[in-house]
Amino acid sequence: MSKLTLFIKASRFWAITVMLVPVFLGGIGAYVWKGEFHPLLFILTLIGAASAHLFSNMINDLWDYRNGADVTAKENPDMISTNSGLLAGGIMSERTYAAITWSLLGLAVLSAVILSLFSSWLVMIYCVLGGAIAYFYVAPPIRYGYRGKGYSEIAILLSFGVLPIMGTYYVQTGEFSFSLVLLSMPVGILTTMLLFNHHFLHWQADEQAGKKSLVVVWGEKKSLRFSKMMLILAYAFVVICVVTKVLPVYALLALLTAIPVYKVYGGLKEENPAVAYLPLMGASQKASVRCGVVMMAAMLIQGIIQ
Image (tube, rainbow, N blue to C red; front, side):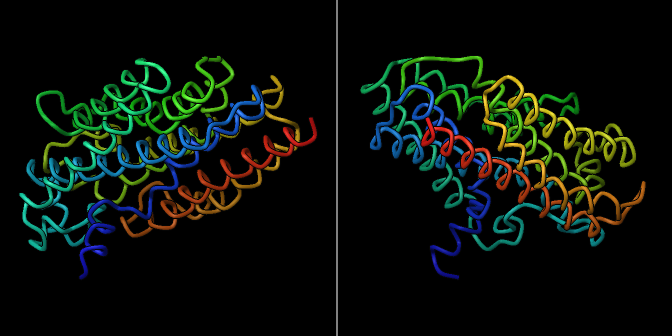
């Protein structure tokens, strides 16, 4: 594999859209609600957020490898590993992998420092909070992703919903708004659902490695019900956003993006082999991105009409 291919595989670059969508929503919100948009600051925000996301992917793989979770999943033929496989497969050395990982964090921090100089020092709070959430997901001594208390789900909602939308909006306008919390809920919950669903692929291997995700703690049946509840809640917030006029009425078209996920749920039983959850993973990611795109389009149309 080329170096670029290795980087894409190691960082799981293909999933970057779930971070870019909330950043765009925050930027569009600033433009539509306040009439403010600074292109260079927005590009820096994109670079910082994307780097932080890729760092999160790689640091999680690095510590899952060190903690034995990735190796256990690789050795279990009934489980589907969701890591890059570069460490567990011996394709990339731990030292090289770690160097790339920390370089991404460095790029995210550099972006935050520059943004803070042109915006406010409060930007650094977003950077520190985001970095801590990403690092301590599987890293000691906290390892909150191993505790099975719902901490990881809350962290994902913050990291892929509230923080990037509010942070982007603040960089553009220097202000906060409660409307941003409502705006962040649909895509934030859908991305949380996506990352929750990926545990179904290897929850038994996680259990063997001592990684207590909610799927491990609750079991497959209860966890599947919770996953469906998140889908309903995410789209309920689309309706709430329309009712509260955070989004225009035509944003209700985003409800249509729930249909493919709903169909996948209909084909699942109370207990399923790991491979049965692959379509759910794909449908979940598409729902998160498509819902966000419809919301963005609705806001832009509203801004043009106004």
